[in-house]
Amino acid sequence: MNQRARAILKRRGELGAEVKVETWREVTRDDGSLASEPAERIFAPGDRVMFLKNDRELGVKNGSVGTEMSVNIDSMQVILDGKHERQVTFELRNYAAIDHGYAATVHKAQGVTVDRVSVLATPGMDRLLSYVSMTGIFAARIARARCPPLAPFDYVVVAVAANHDQLFLA
Image (cartoon, rainbow, N blue to C red):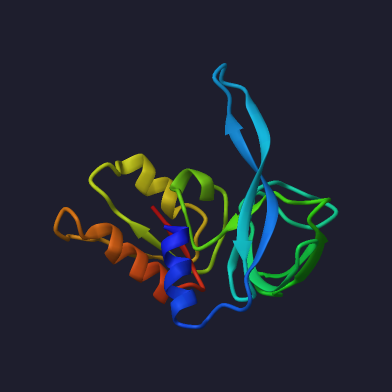
């Protein structure tokens, strides 16, 4: 969903010049252990960014989200969401646990507190996932998509792109 939402914003001209950067992502090995491996992502000013690892020095937590202000191959500047909209600038060689932050799974966003969230209530969503998705939010809108079998994904992507100042859970 992140890639599709980003493509819509790019088409609308809402993103700046793109830069390919090296990031890190967590993967599960065959034995069940977790490991970090290099990955590449394309970011641009205007992108939504999600931080994937706690970093006390930087002042971010796993799940923190913000808006990209500037990016180059070596560093990023992000305005974090929240009352104070704090700016963080970091070198990618020191912190690269980032991804696009337009949408996240309920599990990934667990523990994140945001002012606005939309939740895609799918047939596989039970009471526990519904509860988890609503915990810790101040205000919420629940999006229930009753669309033809092939349409929900496109419907959700348009909703994500239209509301890129909020976190979308699926």
